[in-house]
Image (tube, rainbow, N blue to C red):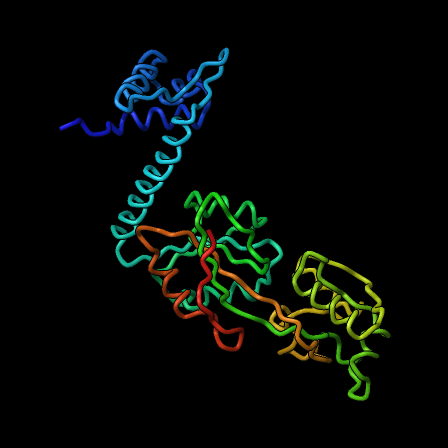
Length: 307
């Protein structure tokens, strides 16, 4: 029977391939360059293929080398995932959840998503904000368990992602009670008041622009912001009417400082939970995804798999 793959050889190859420099890798691993080269040579002999080409001082992956690197990424990521899962089990009942949230996402929505864990003394939660690209990169490297976003996720051809629509919010015109007048129709509100709008990249904004076109009106687009927290502040300062889901200003609506002046028909904001397949699923995350978001804040729908 042929000898199996030596994973020590594979790990040395993986380290050099990721660094792209034999000298730097040898220094980082505290081994000699000759010892490192020997390990890679043994792997090449076992595979019967050359994994690197030398171009001056650079090591360039061959086609076989790129294939080997893809498999090594999967193998060693699975190993890290296994260690993390077993470490969590050794911590007893403690449950850890690492959440990535789009930097412009409603803070109230983020709280609603993790709310079932807030009263759990054995739960540990970390939340990291960033751009969608940054967060998806962390998700693929298994540094995050889930990414929350209100942006339509891009098609991905380098990693399998599972995208769940976990909530859908209605959108309203929101302003101070002083601006409320039951006799004023929607068109009057949209054309006579200054508006605070999400940026053009937002699904809410696209829906609002389509509504304005359908009504054949030219709203006063006073302010455009991509941060829901800033939109909330501007609404509180009464500089105009905000176009936003009520959950963004939940506290202000409860206190009466702001109120919903009108519903905006057919405009919705969809929230997504993006995960990557795991051999050892996170039980805390699974419980949240099964539960979905509270019915007050949206309906849970079936996951959509993107490849």
